[in-house]
Length: 420
Image 1: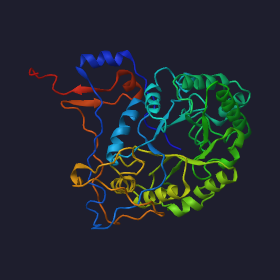
Image 2: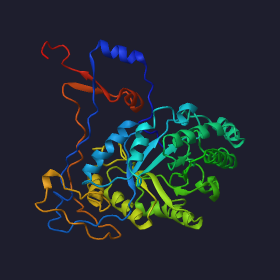
Image 3: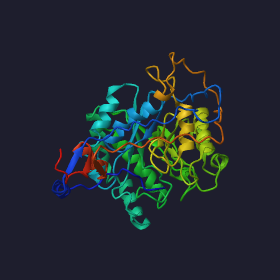
């Protein structure tokens, strides 16, 4: 559906050498500590009671594919009042088969985060083809699907499964070949649905053949018909554990009711999963072509509160997000207000410093559905973007490079000064 930020970037030693010549300083990655107004502040809500909390327990956000995504979870928890984020979500790069096998080191930080707590869930999107975002034509995709249906790629998935088991994260949720009903990815289904389904079955069988695995496989199309009806790509109940859906606020002008009722939309997703006795998920969701849309945010949270997905992870970068993206302040206020201080937190949450109560915070009231609306004309402060380290400008080398060097490179702008 769209190109995704935070893919692995190419990084060579020549960059480091050139950087040294220009006095590039290696700076630690700043931890985002946004300090927006307290939920409800400045909304004209007066003394109205706080909104009820959604009842869904497992939620998270895609914050970055690499180690930066792990580091940002704690800051997002703080922004949400100390809530307990139990779901981590990342993507394997799809440039080479070595990427798809989970190349050495790439998943280490995520595995460490998952192992810290038994009640956490790691969600891993796994491409089904190399050169997965390279614009490969249908005739070539058709041949690749035939090869997958013949079992020619099985060994790559066995290697990934073994790596996950070796990392002691054998219960990872695998979102395999996501958005297969669209046109963006080389692992798309449209050129040959029958071969695609056979290929999926082979990949799942290969991963399940590894001793110690406990994987759950999530079939996650994009909402709507897209290039082909996603129901034509469903590979069967024996190889699917969760039926997910990626659902963004699009196309332009389409309201939430239409997103529910459209062919192959939100309602059909829920009905299809119920008919197949499968739980649902929302691996990707967020704002998109309708801009800052607090009504969409409110309605989508209410929808998930009503239908209880296994997990949901908002895509939290522009134009989709609410914390890392300053373009959506009204939607950010809705998201933050409705999820602030969730009762699922392991410790009692505290409000931001600007709204610190004199007495301990009482547990919020029981959840209600649909979720209440915030004031329509509210203009809350947007989440504050992370600040760059003093006296330097960060250089964006991509998450893969930053993973290996342990942080961002920063270009000092005071290198010419004689003072220390």
